[in-house]
Image (cartoon, rainbow, N blue to C red):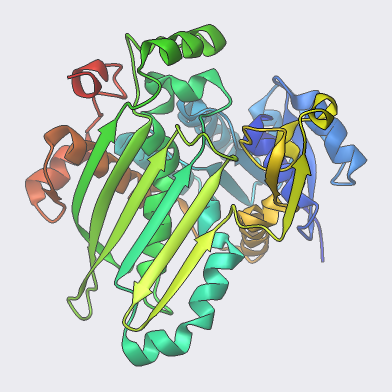
Length: 414
């Protein structure tokens, strides 16, 4: 089987995580990296780990002519510009097989639609990188419960939580660049995985119809004067002027179009989880059965005392977003696989080889953006919104949350 030549447009946190995942992915090589901050280090990592010998490029168009697949892994506010360059290069003769975009597809529904249209315009196959739907711990549980789901009825309540102490990069904290706060950043994960857990066996990822959304957003830690000052000093983002939410929680209701049954997904996300590090928790409850996932439960623990901690290396080698380098630490020895990065990359490569879209395509990414924006609208309105109402559906198409406009003080400090 031939090898798919993959190009990374982006060399930050997620690009490095995906490079780590590639050590476990077949039939692909990292052939090109867009030359921006961190690109040289990422290229060295690829060479050292036999992922390829990537060349550095200053032109997206040149990458299109040297790669089979491009992965858009840059900050949210750059995505459309990059996709326009890819579309132009394909129109001029570049023979790309597919394009990947890391979540979220867009900061608004309008942006996500633009991304979908640009890909469709040049007949590019697409993969929307939502890693949590590819987590083995989730999918193995659903498979294990298949007899119960068939005999007793499907899961009726799914709950998902993603929490850590805050992002790595300044643009993530800026709601006008990122598209919001923690709801935009991580709520897209939690809403999507709830829908996945609730979906009956054998049905498409968008089978369930969203019918209602309720949500609350809040600024519980990073709006306090002490932490605003820390944030401003470290990242140059002033939450006294343009705050974003560091906590969100809500419930999305779905309807089974075949049976009419209503099921619910409860999501909670925060940037104020000051424990070991990143925690993903999911559960699903059905009649007489249940499943539960907690990524902080690991078969490996280590202990580092105060004296020994003086020689501690980077705490994140043990766990993403780790906040401690001493005490009793949970260690995940293969985070890239645990979180689904390996499976989502392999799925994209395999599907592009077959000339088809990935399991999650950009249309799915658009639908997820629609639900995230509905959550922001519900939080602003302070009521449950009817997602079947034609007026609300029309309003959502051009909706931009006050938080994403830099007007978060109006809803978070009121």
